[in-house]
Length: 109
Image (cartoon, rainbow, N blue to C red; front, side, top):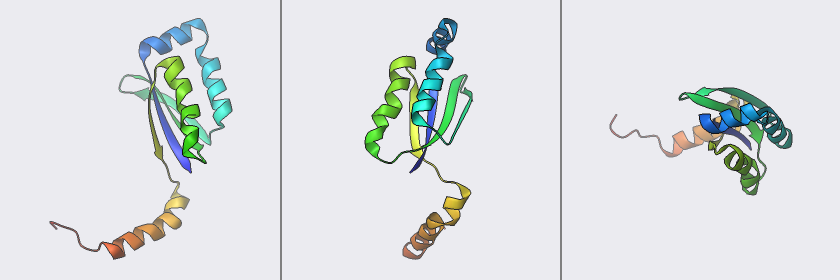
């Protein structure tokens, strides 16, 4: 299943990794192991962050994906399923239609 990992890295910890020259090699190693579909790095709430899209075949993979960020950078993580427009138009669209048929009434409307 395609997943989105949002990594939020504390400024102090990531600054120390950058100053020591270990930040970029760490990120390259983690991404090399994960082989993501895409990875983008940006700012989130005033700190360094990244959005990483990858395929997770089994939930048991989560510790191997999360622990490097926790242990090395003391990062905060959010992991959630993600869909492409093609996913939304395919099976997800059919599931939305089925949910609408099963639950046609909107309360309070």
